[in-house]
Each structure stands twice: as structure tokens, then as C-alpha cells.
Length: 236
Length: 307
Image 1 (spheres, each protein chain N blue to C red):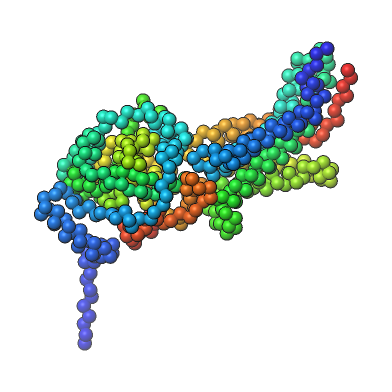
Image 2 (image 1 turned 180 degrees about the vertical axis):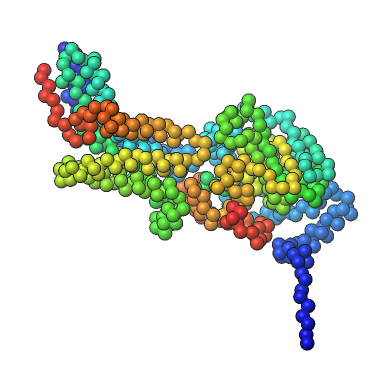
């Protein structure tokens, strides 16, 4: 019997995890290499700031896609593999990758903040206050970072257990963070640039999925809330 | 009994404060003006001369940096794409029309214009409103000398510049990122200031297309958007002209747009700047470091209001 994709990947979960872990480091390695070899373009500071910010946002978006993708893949695979029964089209395991993706968003956001603090502000804390008072996009950016930091700190399994139901409440703030990140992008983008449009489209789409499930238009499924779901046993 | 006479002075009886404070210069100009008339030189013959030795000296950026990082929305909003896209532009033949409040409007071929004047070298700092800066060795003609060709009338208070509109070659103009053609303007005294240049070259070579060939304005104490590229028309006006960025986002881009670290911009920090070639930001100077030369033009003006 040919294995469905979900099962094939699930049985190799450790390897999938490592592949994703290393793939997510590629942008970092790329930026670091270009920084070391002076290949960041004509304006290296701007390249550092923009690229670290872009990757933080991209990982935030990818972490938001995990839940909808899980449902979508399960739906597709159920149709394709119906003759083998529903149980082998189980995609719940990809939820377990989401913590890493979220932590990568925090990682790139940290780099984004550090380049700003080091090269732009030169660690002059009085300037931080001056600048923040003038520029609303910085306020939005700080809020996103604070949310990501709280979510990062509460992401280990023992924190999940300790926080119980509150864990979910806290982690729902990622939706607010994604909207604040959009504000940050729109407010800091130069007029006429198209990039914010793409991010906005993706985030609106992903939030729309949540609105549809909360409102009951799409039926709720176990695992939608991000809590671990007991996996179905697979019998060969 | 003493009867005090009330002083019946109206505004007409007083000298304008700016004029009073500049009285010496005013008398000097008057003298030079008369001398100019006597020598039968056209129009505003009294173009002041700037001594480049007085200007702050910075190390110029490399030709590669200057030609690969350009804000030129007529081609693209991507600064590193302009270098390639701008090569499509046909810059010869090219005529420059100077008209409006002038005695003798002219339309002159660029090649003739360049032959008629001596080309000067000016190493100027360029500060973009986006927070980056460069040092560029321009070659060009002080705008004052060019305006003396047409003999401005006393009613000319402002100068408007119009850049080329040719969407067949300038593909950025097919999007309405700005209201095309690009329009900029200066007050007459700013336009006549000896620092204001019509650049026709760079690094003792032809002006690269991405830097505004065949002719662009350079006003070094103002943000870069006040220095329009590929200009075709210079119009002298009795009133302040509309300018592209000011029209597009008036709250962010003023008509004056003097480099001013104390007037913040909602996106970009104006206190510090990112000198191309240096990773760490450095402080931005008032009037981009040309305060000694130009601050007197704005005496008595609230530059936070007229930003």
C-alpha cells in the first residue's frame, strides 16, 4: 500500500522538524554572510533593518498558517485517501511545528530590534524615548515585540501546563500582534511601495479563517485552538 | 500743558525686519546691480560667488554608490532598480525652456547652454528625506547665472521647475505614484543663492541618467526631493508654485523642506542620518551643514511652521 503524504511525514517527524529548523536559519545565515563580506548592497543598514523585519513578519505569517493548513490538508487528504479510511489523513502533527515557527518570528524580531538599537540609536536610551514619542510606527513595533516576547517566554511545555486555560488566552494575542505588525509596516513603508499590500492580504486572509471558525460558519475541529490533540493510532 | 502728538506710523513707514537686518547686503546688491547695468550685463548680474573652501568637507561617495542608489520615481520606487531602468531615457536632443515673469523667455538646447557657461565643481552633501545621505562631486552652472539669461522681472518671486514627462521611457510614470510631471520650486532668493546649482555632470564626467541627466537642480541645504532631475522647464512666478511631494502628502513634505533635525518626519528620523558607506548613523546638521551660507535667508521665519 502506498503511504499517504501525511503519514509518510508523520513517521519521520524528527527529520521534518530538523529540516524546518535548519531551513528557517537560512535567511539568518544569508544576512550574516552578506554582512561579513560587505554584500548588503549600497545601504547595508537599511538592508539589515528591512530584511530582519521582513523575516520576522514572514515567520509570524507562517505560524498563523499552520492551523488553516492543517485543516485544509486534512480535507484534501481525506478526499484523496478516502479508500484507506480517515485516520491516515491525519495532519494534527504539524501543530507541533508551530512553536518553532513562532520562536523564529521572535528570533528575527530580536535581530530587527538589535540592529535598530545598535546602528540607529547607538544604545542612547534618551533617543529611544524621543523617537518613540514622534513616530507611531515605533510604538506599534514595540507592542508587537512585547507580545512576541511574552508568547516566546510562555511557549515551553511546562509553561503551558502551569498557565492552563490562560495559556490560550495569552496566545490569542498573536492576532493583535499580526494587526499591529501591519500597522508598523504601513506606517514605516514609503508611499507608493506595494510590499505592505501582500502582507496585508495574507494576514487578512488568515484572520478571516479565524473569524469564520469562531462565528461557526466553518465547523470547529479539535486542535483549532492550538492545544495538543491526542493523535490517532495508526495500524499498519 | 504738554500736548503729546500721537505718532502716526503705519506699517508702510517701517522697514521690513528682514530687509533691515540684511541692509548691508541690500546696499551691496544695489551697488552691484547698478554696476551690472553700467557694464551692460544682462539681468541679475550680481550673482554672488561661493568660495568652495568655506564649505564643510566630507569624503565624497564612490561613483558606484552615487550611481546605484537613486530615488527617481519616474523609473521606479526601488532605489536600486533606477540605475538599470533609467538607461532607456533619450537625453539628446534636449531643450530647456525658461519662461514666466521674465523679460526674454528662451528655449535653449542643452548642448548650447553648457557651452555658454563655465562649468564649476561643487562637492555637496545630499540629504534625502528618507534619512540617508551622500557626498557628491557635481559639475554644473550656478542657477543664478542661467536665470540672468532671461532677465527676471521684479514680479518674479518664485521659480518652478518641471521635470520631463515621457511615460514611454519613464516606466514609473505609468503608475500614479505621484502626479506627473514632477514639479518642484524655490523662492527667488533661494534660486539665486550661489549654492543652488544646475548640475550637468558628476565626477568630471557626463551626468549619469539615473542621477538626472541631462540637467538637474541641486539645492544642498534642502532634502533631496527639492532637487528635481531631468528638468525641461524653469518658470518664474509671482506666487508660490505647487510642488509634487507637497501636493501628495502636505503634512509630511513642506514647500521649504530645509534639512532640519528639529522637525520630525513620521517615518524617518531627521535627527540622524545614514551616510552611505557607513553603518552607524550620524547626527544631521541644520541646513545640512550649510547654515553659515543660507540661514540668513530664513531669518524671522518659524521653520517649524514652514518646514
